[in-house]
Length: 242
Image 1 (cartoon, helix red, strand yellow):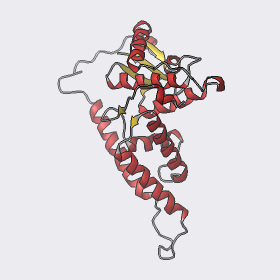
Image 2: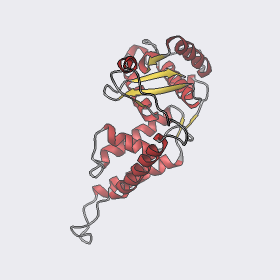
Image 3: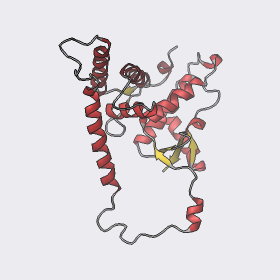
């Protein structure tokens, strides 16, 4: 039985809450420590398509711009496999520049937007208070960064890997409610304040339970009920109740 067939029809729409195709591409390049001017296009294309398949399997709405990016990457991959034309000469342009140029422009715009958003608004923070020594000593050892959709998908794929062969098939007729799972997660986080991403998935859970928990986390993030951070060094995700 398909895992999603046991879950009420539920579709997660990205809208403006999560990232778009450029963000996925940047994420894959950074995760794999790839030089943006020397992208292993076949490898990155395969990973990109893999993420799209997982997103579809999780009922995450894949907008047309994601599919357009997939088509562009596939086309560049095909060009890279073709022998160079004698008409191109030795100075023929690398087909990968078709994606490298917009990537560089996107990164510049994103950096500029982040710089603007980090600036103090007029009239705010004019009289700043220096943190006390006690506050500094209580600060976490590891800097945390905000995690997005693709970090969540990657972490979830790692969670799925821990399902034992004995628990991959579930013949239960019971339907799983995402609404009820959200309620359970809220009750847990209200008590604990935060939790490691992996700890929100029961150790002996079957795949349908894993999927519904993941969809519940996505919906809670969209509703602004939680924030998700990632350790800059260890890379572990943590869910905070807002």
